[in-house]
Length: 111
Length: 113
Image 1 (tube, one colour):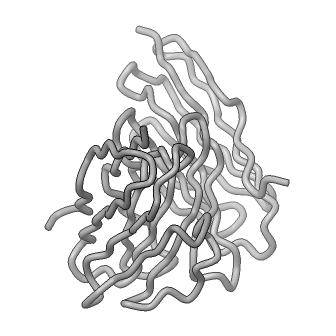
Image 2 (tube, helix red, strand yellow):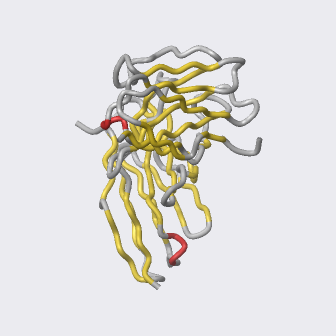
């Protein structure tokens, strides 16, 4: 069973059409939940870290929220340059060694 | 340097040959990670270094894979007797501490023919 599940796998939106990406997780004792953006041919770029349920963080058109079982990445009035793969990752409590990534959501914003 | 540097950016090798991939982390970052990303797959954790030591090597796919880090800085990932299933993008990341956001390099695209 995957510990981090992202949905949808792919999403096509018109420019300006707001939506949300979902990340559900099943690790015990969440230490941190991370969102990354990955463009083709590049490494993931760090966006946010969330540590506790109820926490929210914003950056430009993106807002990340966290509950006890899932996180949402809300994208408001997206632009074509927001097109990328968005990756969610979690770090389990008591573990220093790694963060576990989901398979990502491929987001395509049509002009 | 300003970011995580990986070399080479692309490597094509013949099946059975050994390859070395290099990662130069951000100066001062004590934590270093290797991940592998195959087409259409998520990032697969390989190994983590805190300083020069790797507490857990269980993520390495087989005993053909090894990694080392010297001087708390540069790390090399070595794959011996490469196989076609080793073809992937190998990503390195570094972090100030183990629970801080990682900074990734652009990766090494390995193709085994």
